Image (tube, rainbow, N blue to C red; front, side):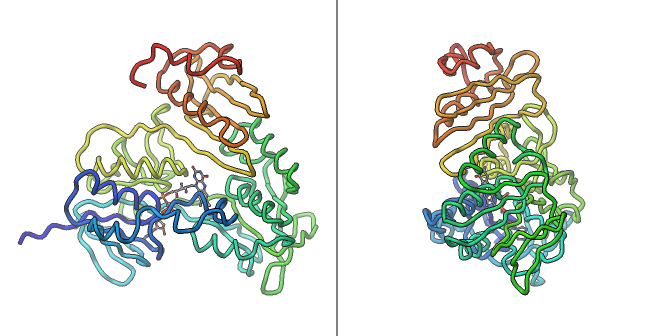
Amino acid sequence: MHYVAPIIIVGAGHAGGRAALALREAGYAGPLLLIGEELHLPYERPALSKQLLLDSQPADDCHIGSAEQYQSLAVERLTGVRVTSIHPQSRHICLHDGRELDYQQLLLATGGRVCQVSLPGTDLAGVQLLRTLDDAAALRSRLHAGKRLVVVGGGFIGLEVAASARQLGCSVTVLESGDRLAARALPPLISARLLALHRARGVEVRLGCQIKAFRGEGSVSAVELADGELLLCDTVLVGIGIQPNTELAAAAGLIVGNGIRVDARLRTSDTHIYAVGDACEFPCRISGQHQRLETWRNAEEQGRYVARSMLGAVDVYDALPWFWSDQFEYSLQLVGQIKAAANCVARVMPDEGLLLFYLDAAQRLQGACGWGAGNAIARDIKLAELLIRSGKQLPADTLADPASSLKSLLKGVANV
Ligand code: FAD
């Protein structure tokens, strides 16, 4: 019988797992191999800093598909296996155990790894990072009422862990070197709300704070600040961002910028190799510039889309950026692009809710960011997404007025 090489997916995380299932849903019946370094089934990561720490969701609920499902769909899984090199000319990859495997098409879904600070004491027990289910279990085992947690980095992961730890009864200090929280992604008005919320809930937040070292005998017992002050603690969480896993792609000669570069069909510079998720940079629907996103929706939608693309679909990937973060009982969401906007219109809602609309010079919506209790802003962000897609010119006074319905602005818009 004629040998057919498999489609191989490197990285069995969110995007990789989703792509494997989507390839079968899209009708691919040939050999399919999903290779991952972790021992777990593919899983979604958002609960790791929230529900999993709060014990309100078991780890199994994070899984994307069950072992039986992969088996019944004939998706072969190699777990605890690292891909060490890619050879595009001969279309094969090498594994850490010396095996070599041919592929017909390759999908790189290698995600990212957490950055560590380069300071003395990072190897002390209790200095934790958070990316995997195992990291979350290790962190959870240290967060008990009365324990002291220091969070290094006032970005989303750090703030979500801070909120979870406070709810578990820990005393929590967040150290941020910048002058506001989550500044890389959020507008100043939303950063200010985050700061007020955390402080109101008893989190000590220090902005403009520089750290010198982690101190302790075997296990961390203090964080030393640049001015010599010692903050006593039992656990440190370092949450200063991730670095995309692009080395395999770069060593194979693929084009790599801030991520593995792909076109609008998520193809790399080699036509047999695709890339998705946190590891790739792709053309932005709004700006046309390449962008790399580190979000649930990006992993989910690129995983679904790339399956069709690998099977020959010619439509382009055109999802809008969207993410959320939950902290205490508040939620924030951001859709589209907010950085290059010509102006911003604020809609102040009841119960501390806030919606910010970002428009271009022609009054077309480019992005929106919302803040509110529970699910308060979810529907409006969905409508904002439709308004962005519509490309309609929008009246600033209607956007600003909490009594005007955003839905009414969609009147007459077809096919959004
Ligand atoms: P991953 O899910 O990281 O998967 C990559 C996999 O590839 C990993 O399992 C890795 O071990 C494996 N791998 C890498 N290199 C190799 C190799 N050479 N060989 C074999 N395997 C390899 N997003 C939101 O929008 N909202 C949120 O609230 C939110 N919360 C989050 C909370 C936490 C704690 C974390 C960590 C992330 C959160 N995210 C959130 C982001 C979202 O989870 C990620 O964007 C998403 O997981 C990215 O999926 P991915 O498949 O690209 O990467």
